[in-house]
Structures are given as C-alpha cells and as structure tokens.
Length: 576
Image (cartoon, rainbow, N blue to C red; front, side):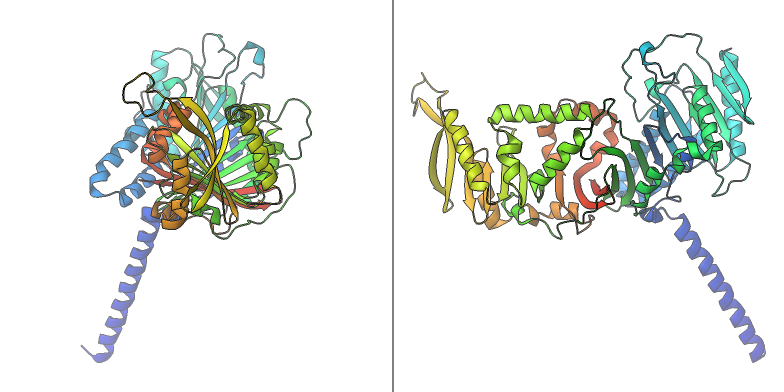
C-alpha cells in the first residue's frame, strides 16, 4: 500500500470513528435517565391549552413514567431495585383499579412525556343547590396517535357490548365518545375525597368521556393528546378552550408571570387558582394563585414555588447563612424553624389569611388553643418584640411527647415583654424562682402539685414542683423552654454542637439557595410519632401518599424573597 493511500485510509478511519463516538455520545446523553436531573423533555404543560383560566387546579408530570422509574433504578442499590420496581408497578395498577385496563398492554405503547390532571370546575352544572359534582380532566400526551386511537376504539367496543349507553359524536371535528349515566341522582353537597393514586371512587365514574386530539405526526408545537373526563361537557369545554386561546390557562398573564419565576429544571408542575372570599373585603394583600415546579435531585425532590399576591412588592432575601440563634437548638431536634423579624412575618401572614375565611378560622383556632394552654396572647406578648433572629424547635422527651425551645434575639421591647409574662404567671398563681444551670442564671415559672406517691410508703415528699416554663438570658438572646431538661439541652448545644453542625441538617439545606429568609426543617422519621399524635388527620394524608411518606427522610423549606408581588420559596424533600 502506498504511503498516500495509507494516510487516506487512516484519515477516513479516524473520521468514521469520531462520527461513531459522537453518535454514541449523543445517544447516551439523550437516552440516559440521568438527564432528568436537569428537567423533563418539556418545561411547561402543553395540556394547559385545554384548561380554563379559572380552573381551580392543574397538575402535570412532564416525563414519561418509565423514564422516571429508570432514574430511580440508577440511584437504587441492588437490594432496593426489585422493591422500587414493585412500588412503581403498584402505583400504575392503582391508577387503573377497576377500569379493566392494563398499563403495559393498553397504555405503555403510546404514552408520551406528559400527564396532566385538572380540576376544571367545583360543580359541573354550576348549581350548588342540587349537590356538587367536581369536573375532572386527564390529558395524556401520545407519541403515537394511531396507537392511542386504536386503544380508545378497542376500549369502547368492549364497553358497547356490555353497556348500551355508549354514545359517539363529532364535536368541532373531533370524535367524542362517552358513557352517559342513566340516573340523574346527584351527590351530596360535600365533595367526595379524590384519591391521587386512583380514579375517583376507584372505578370509572358514571358519566365517562374520551377524545383523541392531534395529527398522526407529532411536533413540539402541536402535540397529540388523549383526553379523559368524568363528563362529556368537560371535554367539550376543553376543545373550546383549545380553539379560543383567550379562554385557556396557557394564555393567562398570571399563569405566565408565575412560571417566569420558576427557573430550575423540572419534571412536574402544578398551578392552583386560590379561592377568593365571596364577601367584599379589603385585605392589605390577597393570595391569588400558586405555582409549584418539582425537579429531581440526587438525594430527593427539589421544588420551587411562586405565590402570586395582589401587591407589587419586591424584597430581597435577608440571610446568607443560618441564623446564629440555631446554636441553642440541640442536634437531636427533629423540627426547627429559624428566621428573622417574627413581628413583620406575623403581620404579613395575618393580612394574607384574612382574605380566606376558612384559612383564617384555622389559624385563629390554632392560636386560641395555644393561648388557652399558655395563658398568653401570642401576637402581643411574643411576636411583637421579636424583631431580630429567632429559632423555634421541638425536642423529644422520655414520655414520647415534645418539649419546645424558643430562642430570640433581644430587642428594646423584650424586657417589657418578659415582665408581662411574669405578671401572667403570677395571675395563674405560679411561683417565679431563680437557680443556676451551666453557669447561667435561670428563671422558672413553677406550680406546686401533689405527688403521685402520696399515701405510699417510703415517699420522699407529698408535694412536688412542676415547671410550667423556663427562661434565660444568654448573650444577646432570650431563651424560653417548657422544661428544665430542655433548657439544659439548649445551653449544652451551644457548647458541644447544635443542629447547625448536624450532618443530616447540613445535607437537608445543601440544595437550597444560600440567600434566603430562614429555614423550616423537619426530620420525618424522628418526629413522625409526635405529629401523628398531635394531628390525627395526618394518618389519612399518609395513606393517600404512602410511597412518598415511606421514603421521606426530611423536609426543608426556605423563602427566597419577593419579586413584583410574587413570593418565592424552595422546598427540598430528601428521600431514602
């Protein structure tokens, strides 16, 4: 072989090898589930064009379920992979319970990269006097509209043989097939609970409708969808919203404004039009809507939220590192809240919740319970003087209940507030005494009680002292606890290591923006028993989202400022 021919052959071989390498690299980077860490194939739900601007809720998963399962398998250990696969299979089966459908056979061949569920209206006929029936729309993108149409045809053929109420019609050129209820019985005035892991009532509703929308070839600008609804009128409205752009959510200025603030990659998105009061009110700020974007982190799920309010305010985050008040929170605390300016936070919260009567009642009832127990007016006696740093935490005790620790930076009004607390204690006939603990002066509000051993032999004393509250001034902080033991733990934390030094806490705040307004931190396994005891409804919530709660390790929330009336926050759900 001549030298020139040899070099020509070598160059051609190198170019071919580079081409194969580039092609292989492209295939790996596009097909690997790891690219979901940067977000799903699409950033916004295409199905928003089917949903009205006034719809109460839209929730979308922006990735094919099989790709999401593949990503979970990448991070699972070999021992966990079979369990993880079984959990995904269970979720798929739960969605199709009592429908006669099989995911692998009927859905998987055509399902695309978007599943959107919308609550279209609280009441289908708009007449609450005859009961309420919520309108639901499920839009599933199709990567093969022919296969999805075949699926619908096959399903309805089986239904028509068993049920003569199946009807079909063309509505604005789109085939609409539905099963209409023969009875006109309405539901009660209350809306039945919706199980997110199955269709309503674990079976198809009495009135059920479907339609396929899109061409035989899909494009990013014209995706194909299969629509499912619990009424044929819901699908008719969806088609109307598609044709009239001014009607649908995708063209809502408030929706687009919220999405602009959600900048991270995401695999899911939710948008909620918050209910407004029926009566005329003039709150300083009202809450209009909420958008939530959920992305995947190597350790769990990372969510951004955008809360749209009625005011055009802009505020930058106040912190660049955890507040120093956390130094008095023990590392064993499974729950902590830390931030600055509690007085201003309470003023904003009160103004916001006043626009919603139901939320306002809930907050007022919670405050009333605490104030009755402690005998204090929280906004006046506690919140008003806390203008600097503060940290609030729970510390489990030996009786499987919880002690509380509250550390707040002193202000010009703090001594006046403490004097007021002393007056409240005296009015309840508590004794106020001082002692030394870890070289610090401690003040305790105590009550004399009768010993449980009264009448028994070898009793040490018939009267015991019960601490109702303990406080101490340490440096620039006022520390309040519900027991002497928790005060000792708070003082010890500052000496030997606090929550900030805890590795689990550091891991839980690592994905959050460093500039923020403080943290809400919850170690779920360590505090689960406490919250289940305090909130009986929590057990029901856990059952409805069991796969999430079974793997939840911790939950951390932080606020990241406000831009032109949109309050932003970031949530990290660390999963096992």
